[in-house]
Length: 615
Image 1 (cartoon, rainbow, N blue to C red):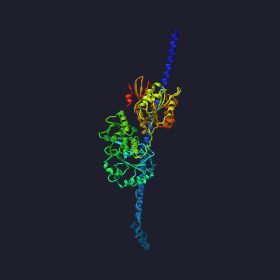
Image 2: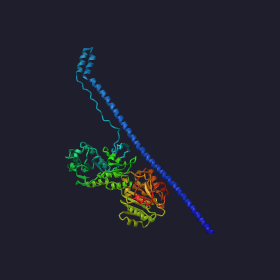
Image 3: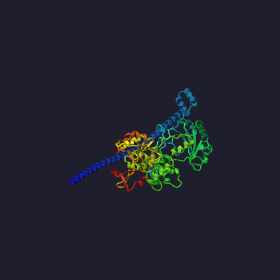
Image 4: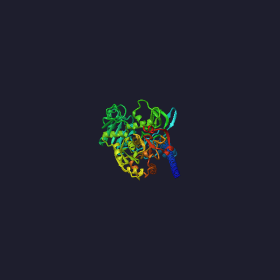
């Protein structure tokens, strides 16, 4: 009887305990759903504010245009008044008018008449006719940032007789990659757009005014492209012009290096002028000069979307890029279609620029193939890498920020050590790994990562995961710091894809708000927030954190094991630190079960997540 009673008591205690856990799970689920709702509301509010800003900019532009029209009308009325006064003055000093005045005033006095007629016969200087003056627009301070005067203007496209109004891609206005370096550049709009973010750039000078313009900020080098338009064409084609010779002599007197870059056209047309330069490069594989190909420019060739999103159509290259578009408008067009059907023979640089903007190339839209194509376009070389090659060849330093990366691993469960180290070993571009883990961590890390600097520390039993991460953060030396979760799965391109976002975003923290997850117990693969790719958001998940080291050291990690990432994101919002959500690929969040994910993500299928995520 006592045994049965004890069993009953034990069963009751377990039932009460399970009920308590169930109540706690329910409370946590309610709290998670509330946080999700708040986050979704924040996203919607951010999107609404972005649309309001865009509409305000459009209204401001319209008001400025109206003000300019009124200014022109007022100037025209003022000019017409001046013309009327001039005509009246001209009539008054005309000989016949003065003779008439003399006769009228002297008709009763012969002496006065004689004097008046004598005076009227003398020549009188006529007033000078007024001239129209150029009407200046509203005075604005000159913006020297790259791209400030390089914005898209043609917002309407026509397809099959239908008109589409686009919200133009906003060309970024800095910063540049090498602010210590100044280059004087003569280039067509395409090449100028690729180069403008690589240094402080002086353009727009002509053969007549370069001696006045360039001394304002004496350049370190002169780069001249084989231009097909503008005031320098006649100077560099055929026999070199006197203006070009004077420019090169001016550079030689000041020790300014000179570079000729052949990017198109018959090289023989430019050969004589090119011989006058210290260095020559070409994008033509058939020309026997050092190679300098076009590369994608991450500041403008990137997957940042248009405000209105993409049109659900596959467009041919002719439909996408009509001949009247300027290059800023071309950058808008690149982001517009679901896919671009490019004919054989399309230049490789054009395909790379399209792919770098995240546009599928082919007859159908495919986000996975588009992501791989974008990765390939960047791997072929960016303009920063091309300019590194140029500067090395001509003997100028190419100091610029790096994307060197330290990885933080806080391994609380010794059974996860091998898995965690294997995930790091897949990555490229890792300079340092900080492992806070069990005693065997150091030896295993050095075996698995023989070419990487390894620093290991032992955790204290009472330390939270946030406290361990702070210990590791103080040991990081690279410019970027990645936090990787030992429970999760990372693809071989995970870090290189994330690092790429630092080339075109202005965020201090980059991660993933859109990602795949796998729950072991139900064997379910989920997709979280698929619409949260390539956008600034209030938060990203902690296991995907990649941050600038200095910004992260100012923020620090909360002394928590669960929820440290939520606290960190909240602090970012408080301090105004930008957080950017990159693509959905390359990462899988792995848990046994997760009620929050089940209520906040889309079910993809029952099965492994890796075929979907790791491309």
